[in-house]
Length: 336
Image 1 (cartoon, helix red, strand yellow):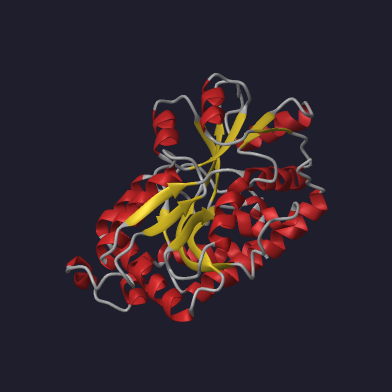
Image 2: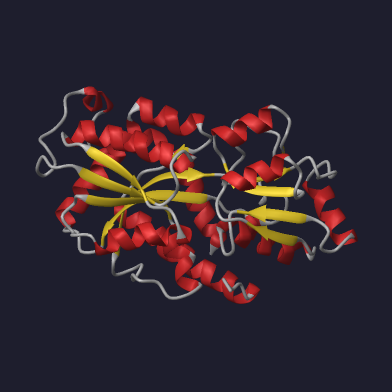
């Protein structure tokens, strides 16, 4: 199931040129004046599920700027980090379904969190996927503490010294943790998981060699450390190789297709949002993603714009949720 989802995402990677058609407007229309205010003049709020300053926050604010121009209404960004994105998703779930409160998050609060404990919202009933915004590759990076020259050498070390290799992720049951479990299952190597609560301290500790391997999403801060030679790419979770690291293989190429996962981010609304507003918002997001300034902002941060129909996004979320349920059950992953 994960393999088929990766193939669909690969199509999304190659479909960015079709975003204008998905929006139902010619590309030259995007540069024209703003449409009538949405659907009134009061501000629209986007709740971001992660702290300010990270790549998801940067993208959310760039998207908000484009939507503000297109909708003719102010768009305010509010960061509500915590609980793997569940705090922000709960705010969206409980907001009035009037099109004035949206959420920007990875799909994790809908496809991972539900399988790890009780949530204050129903991810199917209470949240409406509006549009996929981007796919963010997951980078597997060697820190100064790592002596392995490449990923196969890392696996060999982990097999020779079970538990000695330490692998840092953004937290228990995060996408990085799921990838690690799949890698250990596929290679029969034993690696020690080092879960963090977010990316800032994780990156700081990586640079000082507190562990051997770091899994993290692409972003400007990470790219800077790679370019400086302080972090070395070993592999990438993505449908295809990343343009900025053409020599770095995907996990699928390394014989681990089930671990070849990437983060998908999107815009979400309360589950009771009327279909007419959902369709309008979906069209506006597709229109924004086709704008050169937003596309370039995404691409320069190492991420890839996606877009597409709301129904397709919802279907991908449902399929990934089922795949993750199987992985979590097989690996016996628990938050306690």
